[in-house]
Length: 476
Image 1 (spheres, rainbow, N blue to C red):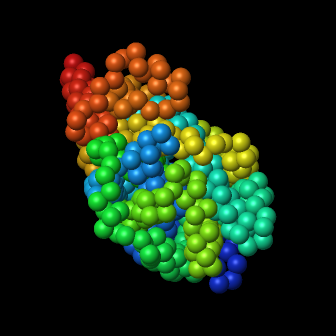
Image 2 (tube, rainbow, N blue to C red):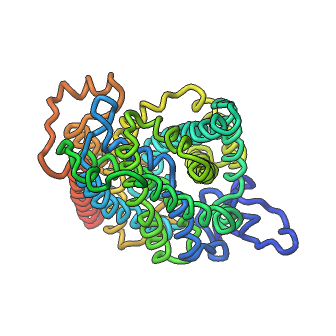
Protein backbone atom coordinates (compact mmCIF):
# COMPACT_ATOMS: atom_id res chain seq x y z
CA UNK A 1 0.00 0.00 0.00
CA UNK A 2 1.10 3.60 -0.45
CA UNK A 3 2.56 5.61 2.41
CA UNK A 4 0.09 6.63 5.15
CA UNK A 5 -1.81 9.72 4.15
CA UNK A 6 -1.38 9.17 0.40
CA UNK A 7 -4.34 8.50 -1.81
CA UNK A 8 -4.18 5.54 -4.13
CA UNK A 9 -6.14 5.16 -7.32
CA UNK A 10 -6.96 1.87 -9.06
CA UNK A 11 -4.87 3.00 -12.04
CA UNK A 12 -1.84 3.20 -9.77
CA UNK A 13 -2.02 -0.23 -8.18
CA UNK A 14 -3.42 -3.57 -9.24
CA UNK A 15 -5.43 -4.76 -6.26
CA UNK A 16 -5.35 -8.50 -6.82
CA UNK A 17 -3.99 -11.33 -4.75
CA UNK A 18 -0.70 -12.65 -6.15
CA UNK A 19 -0.73 -16.09 -7.68
CA UNK A 20 0.97 -18.85 -5.73
CA UNK A 21 4.73 -18.63 -6.10
CA UNK A 22 4.66 -15.12 -7.59
CA UNK A 23 6.47 -12.33 -5.75
CA UNK A 24 4.13 -9.52 -4.78
CA UNK A 25 6.31 -6.96 -6.55
CA UNK A 26 5.81 -8.72 -9.88
CA UNK A 27 2.05 -8.31 -9.48
CA UNK A 28 1.96 -4.68 -8.40
CA UNK A 29 4.81 -2.79 -10.04
CA UNK A 30 3.53 -2.99 -13.65
CA UNK A 31 0.86 -0.37 -12.90
CA UNK A 32 2.41 1.48 -9.98
CA UNK A 33 1.63 5.09 -10.74
CA UNK A 34 2.97 8.47 -9.64
CA UNK A 35 3.07 8.07 -5.84
CA UNK A 36 6.33 7.19 -4.03
CA UNK A 37 7.24 3.51 -4.27
CA UNK A 38 6.89 1.87 -0.82
CA UNK A 39 9.83 0.04 0.75
CA UNK A 40 8.45 -3.42 0.06
CA UNK A 41 8.50 -2.76 -3.70
CA UNK A 42 12.04 -1.38 -3.77
CA UNK A 43 13.43 -4.74 -4.84
CA UNK A 44 15.95 -3.98 -7.62
CA UNK A 45 19.51 -4.57 -6.39
CA UNK A 46 22.73 -3.55 -8.11
CA UNK A 47 22.85 -6.62 -10.38
CA UNK A 48 19.21 -6.14 -11.42
CA UNK A 49 19.76 -2.47 -12.23
CA UNK A 50 23.12 -3.10 -13.87
CA UNK A 51 21.64 -5.72 -16.20
CA UNK A 52 18.67 -3.47 -16.99
CA UNK A 53 20.79 -0.46 -17.97
CA UNK A 54 23.49 -2.48 -19.68
CA UNK A 55 20.80 -4.14 -21.76
CA UNK A 56 19.22 -0.77 -22.61
CA UNK A 57 22.65 0.50 -23.66
CA UNK A 58 23.08 -2.41 -26.09
CA UNK A 59 21.18 -1.20 -29.13
CA UNK A 60 21.33 -1.37 -32.89
CA UNK A 61 20.47 2.32 -32.75
CA UNK A 62 23.69 3.01 -30.83
CA UNK A 63 25.68 1.08 -33.44
CA UNK A 64 24.03 3.16 -36.17
CA UNK A 65 24.80 6.35 -34.21
CA UNK A 66 28.45 5.26 -34.06
CA UNK A 67 28.42 5.09 -37.85
CA UNK A 68 27.23 8.71 -38.01
CA UNK A 69 30.51 9.76 -36.38
CA UNK A 70 32.57 8.65 -39.38
CA UNK A 71 30.12 8.85 -42.29
CA UNK A 72 30.70 11.54 -44.95
CA UNK A 73 29.32 14.95 -44.03
CA UNK A 74 26.92 15.03 -46.99
CA UNK A 75 25.34 11.82 -45.65
CA UNK A 76 24.52 13.47 -42.30
CA UNK A 77 27.77 12.20 -40.78
CA UNK A 78 30.67 14.01 -39.14
CA UNK A 79 33.51 12.28 -41.05
CA UNK A 80 35.68 12.02 -37.91
CA UNK A 81 38.86 9.99 -38.01
CA UNK A 82 38.67 6.81 -35.93
CA UNK A 83 40.98 8.13 -33.15
CA UNK A 84 38.88 11.29 -32.81
CA UNK A 85 35.66 9.29 -32.87
CA UNK A 86 36.93 7.01 -30.08
CA UNK A 87 38.08 10.02 -28.04
CA UNK A 88 34.68 11.69 -28.41
CA UNK A 89 32.92 8.44 -27.46
CA UNK A 90 34.99 7.91 -24.30
CA UNK A 91 34.75 11.54 -23.14
CA UNK A 92 30.99 11.74 -23.72
CA UNK A 93 30.41 8.33 -22.12
CA UNK A 94 32.19 9.41 -18.93
CA UNK A 95 30.31 12.70 -18.65
CA UNK A 96 26.96 11.34 -19.82
CA UNK A 97 26.90 8.32 -17.56
CA UNK A 98 27.92 10.37 -14.54
CA UNK A 99 24.90 12.58 -15.19
CA UNK A 100 22.70 9.53 -15.83
CA UNK A 101 23.83 8.05 -12.53
CA UNK A 102 23.01 11.29 -10.70
CA UNK A 103 19.54 11.27 -12.25
CA UNK A 104 19.14 7.68 -11.08
CA UNK A 105 20.25 8.63 -7.57
CA UNK A 106 17.70 11.46 -7.33
CA UNK A 107 14.99 9.12 -8.62
CA UNK A 108 15.89 6.47 -6.03
CA UNK A 109 15.83 9.19 -3.36
CA UNK A 110 12.38 10.59 -4.22
CA UNK A 111 10.96 7.21 -5.39
CA UNK A 112 8.68 8.80 -8.01
CA UNK A 113 8.73 8.82 -11.83
CA UNK A 114 11.03 11.28 -13.55
CA UNK A 115 8.39 13.72 -14.78
CA UNK A 116 6.64 13.74 -11.41
CA UNK A 117 10.06 14.48 -9.92
CA UNK A 118 10.23 17.65 -12.06
CA UNK A 119 7.44 19.13 -9.94
CA UNK A 120 10.03 19.89 -7.26
CA UNK A 121 12.29 22.24 -9.26
CA UNK A 122 9.71 23.61 -11.75
CA UNK A 123 6.42 23.49 -9.84
CA UNK A 124 3.45 21.22 -10.36
CA UNK A 125 2.20 22.97 -13.49
CA UNK A 126 5.73 23.86 -14.46
CA UNK A 127 6.46 20.14 -14.81
CA UNK A 128 3.92 19.90 -17.62
CA UNK A 129 6.30 21.41 -20.21
CA UNK A 130 9.13 18.88 -19.71
CA UNK A 131 6.48 16.16 -19.46
CA UNK A 132 5.13 17.07 -22.89
CA UNK A 133 8.67 17.16 -24.30
CA UNK A 134 9.48 13.81 -22.73
CA UNK A 135 6.33 12.23 -24.11
CA UNK A 136 7.40 13.45 -27.55
CA UNK A 137 10.91 12.14 -26.91
CA UNK A 138 9.66 8.72 -25.85
CA UNK A 139 7.37 8.60 -28.84
CA UNK A 140 10.22 9.59 -31.15
CA UNK A 141 12.59 7.04 -29.68
CA UNK A 142 9.90 4.34 -29.83
CA UNK A 143 9.38 5.13 -33.51
CA UNK A 144 13.11 5.02 -34.26
CA UNK A 145 13.59 1.79 -32.31
CA UNK A 146 10.79 0.12 -34.25
CA UNK A 147 12.32 1.36 -37.51
CA UNK A 148 15.72 -0.07 -36.56
CA UNK A 149 14.21 -3.38 -35.44
CA UNK A 150 12.14 -3.67 -38.61
CA UNK A 151 15.13 -2.75 -40.80
CA UNK A 152 17.24 -5.44 -39.17
CA UNK A 153 14.47 -8.04 -39.29
CA UNK A 154 13.73 -7.17 -42.93
CA UNK A 155 17.39 -7.55 -43.88
CA UNK A 156 17.42 -10.96 -42.19
CA UNK A 157 14.19 -12.22 -43.73
CA UNK A 158 15.33 -10.97 -47.14
CA UNK A 159 18.53 -13.00 -46.85
CA UNK A 160 16.88 -16.13 -45.47
CA UNK A 161 13.37 -16.11 -46.92
CA UNK A 162 13.55 -13.69 -49.83
CA UNK A 163 10.89 -11.57 -48.13
CA UNK A 164 11.53 -8.12 -46.64
CA UNK A 165 8.20 -7.08 -45.16
CA UNK A 166 9.40 -3.99 -43.26
CA UNK A 167 5.84 -2.92 -42.39
CA UNK A 168 5.04 -6.39 -41.06
CA UNK A 169 8.05 -6.33 -38.72
CA UNK A 170 7.18 -2.85 -37.45
CA UNK A 171 3.70 -3.99 -36.48
CA UNK A 172 4.94 -7.25 -34.94
CA UNK A 173 7.59 -5.64 -32.75
CA UNK A 174 5.20 -2.86 -31.79
CA UNK A 175 3.06 -5.61 -30.25
CA UNK A 176 6.14 -7.13 -28.56
CA UNK A 177 7.06 -3.74 -27.03
CA UNK A 178 3.51 -3.43 -25.70
CA UNK A 179 3.66 -6.85 -24.06
CA UNK A 180 7.02 -6.07 -22.42
CA UNK A 181 5.75 -2.70 -21.15
CA UNK A 182 2.87 -4.50 -19.44
CA UNK A 183 5.47 -6.42 -17.37
CA UNK A 184 6.78 -3.26 -15.71
CA UNK A 185 10.45 -2.72 -14.70
CA UNK A 186 10.73 -5.51 -12.12
CA UNK A 187 9.01 -8.13 -14.24
CA UNK A 188 10.99 -7.05 -17.30
CA UNK A 189 14.36 -7.51 -15.56
CA UNK A 190 13.53 -10.79 -13.87
CA UNK A 191 11.47 -12.47 -16.58
CA UNK A 192 13.30 -11.25 -19.68
CA UNK A 193 16.74 -9.72 -19.16
CA UNK A 194 18.15 -12.21 -16.67
CA UNK A 195 16.83 -15.28 -18.43
CA UNK A 196 17.59 -14.48 -22.04
CA UNK A 197 18.79 -11.15 -23.30
CA UNK A 198 22.15 -10.48 -21.68
CA UNK A 199 23.91 -13.76 -22.53
CA UNK A 200 22.85 -13.95 -26.17
CA UNK A 201 23.73 -10.29 -26.68
CA UNK A 202 27.29 -10.68 -25.32
CA UNK A 203 28.02 -13.55 -27.69
CA UNK A 204 26.57 -11.62 -30.63
CA UNK A 205 28.63 -8.50 -29.96
CA UNK A 206 31.87 -10.43 -29.55
CA UNK A 207 31.30 -12.06 -32.92
CA UNK A 208 30.41 -8.78 -34.66
CA UNK A 209 33.55 -7.15 -33.27
CA UNK A 210 35.62 -9.96 -34.80
CA UNK A 211 33.66 -9.85 -38.08
CA UNK A 212 34.07 -6.07 -38.46
CA UNK A 213 37.88 -6.42 -38.55
CA UNK A 214 38.32 -9.87 -40.10
CA UNK A 215 40.30 -9.60 -43.32
CA UNK A 216 40.56 -5.83 -42.99
CA UNK A 217 43.49 -3.57 -42.13
CA UNK A 218 42.98 -2.16 -38.63
CA UNK A 219 46.11 0.01 -38.78
CA UNK A 220 44.94 1.62 -42.03
CA UNK A 221 41.50 2.25 -40.52
CA UNK A 222 43.09 3.89 -37.48
CA UNK A 223 45.18 6.24 -39.61
CA UNK A 224 42.40 7.16 -42.03
CA UNK A 225 42.15 10.98 -42.08
CA UNK A 226 39.01 12.81 -41.03
CA UNK A 227 37.57 16.13 -39.94
CA UNK A 228 38.36 17.83 -36.63
CA UNK A 229 34.80 17.86 -35.34
CA UNK A 230 35.53 16.40 -31.89
CA UNK A 231 32.95 18.47 -30.01
CA UNK A 232 30.22 17.76 -32.54
CA UNK A 233 30.91 14.05 -32.04
CA UNK A 234 30.97 14.56 -28.27
CA UNK A 235 27.54 16.22 -28.41
CA UNK A 236 26.10 13.43 -30.57
CA UNK A 237 27.22 10.68 -28.17
CA UNK A 238 26.27 12.69 -25.08
CA UNK A 239 22.80 13.43 -26.49
CA UNK A 240 22.10 9.74 -26.93
CA UNK A 241 23.00 9.10 -23.27
CA UNK A 242 21.31 12.21 -21.86
CA UNK A 243 18.11 11.23 -23.64
CA UNK A 244 17.73 8.56 -20.93
CA UNK A 245 17.94 10.99 -17.99
CA UNK A 246 14.25 12.03 -18.24
CA UNK A 247 13.39 8.31 -17.95
CA UNK A 248 15.93 7.01 -15.45
CA UNK A 249 13.88 7.68 -12.30
CA UNK A 250 11.01 5.63 -13.73
CA UNK A 251 13.20 2.58 -13.03
CA UNK A 252 15.54 3.57 -10.18
CA UNK A 253 12.53 4.41 -8.02
CA UNK A 254 12.35 0.62 -7.53
CA UNK A 255 16.04 0.45 -6.45
CA UNK A 256 16.88 -0.69 -2.94
CA UNK A 257 18.87 2.44 -2.13
CA UNK A 258 20.15 5.71 -3.55
CA UNK A 259 23.62 4.21 -3.97
CA UNK A 260 22.20 1.31 -5.98
CA UNK A 261 20.24 3.73 -8.16
CA UNK A 262 23.39 5.75 -8.91
CA UNK A 263 25.75 2.85 -9.61
CA UNK A 264 23.37 0.57 -11.47
CA UNK A 265 22.32 3.26 -13.96
CA UNK A 266 25.69 5.01 -14.34
CA UNK A 267 27.90 1.93 -14.51
CA UNK A 268 25.38 -0.33 -16.22
CA UNK A 269 24.79 2.01 -19.15
CA UNK A 270 28.47 2.98 -19.38
CA UNK A 271 29.95 -0.50 -19.86
CA UNK A 272 28.50 -1.23 -23.34
CA UNK A 273 28.43 2.39 -24.54
CA UNK A 274 32.05 2.77 -25.65
CA UNK A 275 32.38 -0.58 -27.49
CA UNK A 276 28.96 -0.21 -29.16
CA UNK A 277 29.60 3.29 -30.56
CA UNK A 278 33.11 2.23 -31.60
CA UNK A 279 31.73 -0.90 -33.27
CA UNK A 280 29.38 1.19 -35.41
CA UNK A 281 32.25 3.46 -36.47
CA UNK A 282 34.52 0.52 -37.31
CA UNK A 283 31.86 -1.33 -39.32
CA UNK A 284 31.08 1.83 -41.30
CA UNK A 285 34.76 2.26 -42.16
CA UNK A 286 35.77 -1.36 -42.68
CA UNK A 287 32.73 -2.21 -44.81
CA UNK A 288 32.74 1.10 -46.72
CA UNK A 289 29.23 2.08 -45.62
CA UNK A 290 28.04 5.30 -47.25
CA UNK A 291 24.81 5.79 -45.27
CA UNK A 292 23.68 4.58 -41.87
CA UNK A 293 20.72 2.33 -42.84
CA UNK A 294 23.07 0.30 -45.09
CA UNK A 295 25.02 -0.81 -42.01
CA UNK A 296 22.39 -3.37 -41.00
CA UNK A 297 22.15 -4.67 -44.54
CA UNK A 298 25.93 -5.15 -44.62
CA UNK A 299 25.81 -7.20 -41.41
CA UNK A 300 22.97 -9.35 -42.75
CA UNK A 301 25.04 -10.09 -45.86
CA UNK A 302 28.03 -11.21 -43.79
CA UNK A 303 27.16 -14.89 -43.62
CA UNK A 304 25.23 -17.27 -41.36
CA UNK A 305 26.96 -16.24 -38.12
CA UNK A 306 26.38 -12.54 -38.85
CA UNK A 307 22.74 -13.28 -39.55
CA UNK A 308 22.39 -15.03 -36.16
CA UNK A 309 24.15 -12.14 -34.39
CA UNK A 310 21.90 -9.59 -36.07
CA UNK A 311 18.86 -11.72 -35.22
CA UNK A 312 19.82 -11.71 -31.53
CA UNK A 313 20.39 -7.96 -31.49
CA UNK A 314 17.17 -7.34 -33.41
CA UNK A 315 15.12 -9.31 -30.89
CA UNK A 316 16.96 -7.67 -28.00
CA UNK A 317 16.26 -4.22 -29.46
CA UNK A 318 12.69 -4.62 -28.27
CA UNK A 319 13.84 -3.70 -24.74
CA UNK A 320 14.57 -0.11 -25.82
CA UNK A 321 11.13 0.07 -27.38
CA UNK A 322 9.71 -1.33 -24.12
CA UNK A 323 11.47 1.35 -22.06
CA UNK A 324 10.21 4.21 -24.20
CA UNK A 325 6.66 2.89 -24.38
CA UNK A 326 6.58 2.28 -20.61
CA UNK A 327 8.12 5.65 -19.72
CA UNK A 328 5.95 7.48 -22.23
CA UNK A 329 2.88 6.08 -20.49
CA UNK A 330 4.28 6.83 -17.01
CA UNK A 331 5.10 10.39 -18.08
CA UNK A 332 1.55 10.88 -19.32
CA UNK A 333 0.33 9.92 -15.85
CA UNK A 334 1.86 13.15 -14.55
CA UNK A 335 -0.75 14.91 -16.70
CA UNK A 336 -3.64 12.43 -16.37
CA UNK A 337 -3.01 10.45 -13.14
CA UNK A 338 -6.44 8.83 -13.11
CA UNK A 339 -6.18 7.18 -16.53
CA UNK A 340 -5.22 3.48 -16.21
CA UNK A 341 -1.55 2.98 -17.00
CA UNK A 342 -2.18 -0.09 -19.13
CA UNK A 343 -4.53 1.89 -21.36
CA UNK A 344 -1.87 4.57 -21.78
CA UNK A 345 0.71 1.90 -22.65
CA UNK A 346 -1.57 0.42 -25.32
CA UNK A 347 -2.41 3.80 -26.89
CA UNK A 348 1.21 4.96 -26.78
CA UNK A 349 2.52 1.78 -28.40
CA UNK A 350 -0.12 1.94 -31.13
CA UNK A 351 0.81 5.56 -31.90
CA UNK A 352 4.52 4.65 -32.07
CA UNK A 353 3.78 1.79 -34.45
CA UNK A 354 1.86 4.06 -36.79
CA UNK A 355 4.68 6.60 -36.59
CA UNK A 356 7.23 3.94 -37.48
CA UNK A 357 5.30 3.25 -40.67
CA UNK A 358 5.58 6.91 -41.70
CA UNK A 359 8.94 8.32 -40.46
CA UNK A 360 12.23 8.47 -42.40
CA UNK A 361 15.35 7.30 -40.52
CA UNK A 362 17.39 10.12 -42.06
CA UNK A 363 15.91 12.53 -39.50
CA UNK A 364 17.74 10.67 -36.74
CA UNK A 365 20.83 12.82 -36.11
CA UNK A 366 19.09 16.25 -35.88
CA UNK A 367 16.52 14.57 -33.64
CA UNK A 368 19.26 13.49 -31.20
CA UNK A 369 20.78 16.95 -31.03
CA UNK A 370 17.42 18.67 -30.57
CA UNK A 371 16.55 16.40 -27.64
CA UNK A 372 19.93 16.98 -26.06
CA UNK A 373 19.44 20.74 -26.19
CA UNK A 374 16.35 20.39 -23.98
CA UNK A 375 17.39 17.71 -21.52
CA UNK A 376 21.00 18.66 -20.76
CA UNK A 377 20.00 21.96 -19.07
CA UNK A 378 16.87 20.36 -17.57
CA UNK A 379 19.03 17.89 -15.67
CA UNK A 380 21.25 20.78 -14.54
CA UNK A 381 18.25 22.59 -13.02
CA UNK A 382 17.06 19.41 -11.28
CA UNK A 383 20.51 18.73 -9.85
CA UNK A 384 20.96 22.31 -8.60
CA UNK A 385 17.56 22.33 -6.90
CA UNK A 386 18.09 18.91 -5.33
CA UNK A 387 21.47 19.96 -3.91
CA UNK A 388 20.00 23.12 -2.39
CA UNK A 389 17.11 21.07 -0.98
CA UNK A 390 19.63 19.22 1.18
CA UNK A 391 20.23 16.38 -1.31
CA UNK A 392 16.82 14.93 -0.53
CA UNK A 393 13.28 15.31 -1.87
CA UNK A 394 10.56 14.27 0.56
CA UNK A 395 6.90 13.80 -0.31
CA UNK A 396 5.97 17.43 0.25
CA UNK A 397 8.83 18.74 -1.93
CA UNK A 398 7.25 16.93 -4.88
CA UNK A 399 3.50 16.82 -4.25
CA UNK A 400 3.12 20.13 -2.41
CA UNK A 401 5.46 22.13 -4.60
CA UNK A 402 4.22 25.56 -5.78
CA UNK A 403 2.09 25.62 -8.90
CA UNK A 404 4.92 27.32 -10.81
CA UNK A 405 8.55 28.22 -10.18
CA UNK A 406 9.18 30.63 -13.04
CA UNK A 407 12.77 31.43 -12.05
CA UNK A 408 13.79 27.78 -12.47
CA UNK A 409 11.94 27.47 -15.77
CA UNK A 410 13.82 30.54 -17.00
CA UNK A 411 17.15 28.97 -15.95
CA UNK A 412 16.25 25.83 -17.92
CA UNK A 413 15.18 27.72 -21.03
CA UNK A 414 18.29 29.94 -20.95
CA UNK A 415 20.39 26.77 -21.01
CA UNK A 416 18.35 25.50 -23.95
CA UNK A 417 18.76 28.78 -25.84
CA UNK A 418 22.51 28.77 -25.22
CA UNK A 419 22.75 25.22 -26.58
CA UNK A 420 20.88 26.20 -29.72
CA UNK A 421 22.94 29.39 -30.15
CA UNK A 422 26.16 27.39 -29.98
CA UNK A 423 24.86 24.52 -32.11
CA UNK A 424 21.50 25.10 -33.89
CA UNK A 425 19.79 21.74 -34.32
CA UNK A 426 16.35 20.62 -35.37
CA UNK A 427 14.00 20.87 -38.35
CA UNK A 428 14.91 23.29 -41.12
CA UNK A 429 12.30 25.85 -40.11
CA UNK A 430 13.73 25.93 -36.57
CA UNK A 431 17.38 26.33 -37.59
CA UNK A 432 16.33 29.12 -39.95
CA UNK A 433 14.80 30.98 -37.01
CA UNK A 434 17.89 30.42 -34.84
CA UNK A 435 20.10 31.70 -37.67
CA UNK A 436 18.73 35.22 -37.06
CA UNK A 437 20.52 35.15 -33.66
CA UNK A 438 23.90 34.76 -35.44
CA UNK A 439 24.95 31.47 -33.78
CA UNK A 440 28.57 31.16 -32.73
CA UNK A 441 30.19 27.82 -31.88
CA UNK A 442 32.96 27.85 -29.29
CA UNK A 443 36.25 26.12 -30.14
CA UNK A 444 35.94 24.05 -26.96
CA UNK A 445 33.16 22.55 -24.91
CA UNK A 446 30.70 21.97 -27.73
CA UNK A 447 27.16 22.98 -26.80
CA UNK A 448 26.32 20.47 -24.06
CA UNK A 449 28.80 21.48 -21.37
CA UNK A 450 28.26 25.28 -21.61
CA UNK A 451 24.48 24.89 -21.60
CA UNK A 452 24.62 22.57 -18.57
CA UNK A 453 26.92 24.96 -16.69
CA UNK A 454 24.77 28.01 -17.49
CA UNK A 455 21.51 26.36 -16.40
CA UNK A 456 23.12 24.95 -13.24
CA UNK A 457 24.58 28.29 -12.13
CA UNK A 458 21.42 30.24 -12.96
CA UNK A 459 19.29 27.73 -11.06
CA UNK A 460 21.54 28.02 -8.00
CA UNK A 461 21.36 31.81 -8.12
CA UNK A 462 17.61 31.86 -8.71
CA UNK A 463 16.95 29.46 -5.84
CA UNK A 464 19.21 31.52 -3.52
CA UNK A 465 17.46 34.78 -4.45
CA UNK A 466 13.98 33.34 -3.93
CA UNK A 467 14.99 31.79 -0.61
CA UNK A 468 16.48 35.08 0.58
CA UNK A 469 13.34 36.99 -0.44
CA UNK A 470 11.12 34.50 1.39
CA UNK A 471 13.27 34.81 4.51
CA UNK A 472 12.97 38.61 4.48
CA UNK A 473 9.21 38.44 4.00
CA UNK A 474 8.83 36.04 6.92
CA UNK A 475 10.69 38.49 9.17
CA UNK A 476 8.70 41.51 8.02
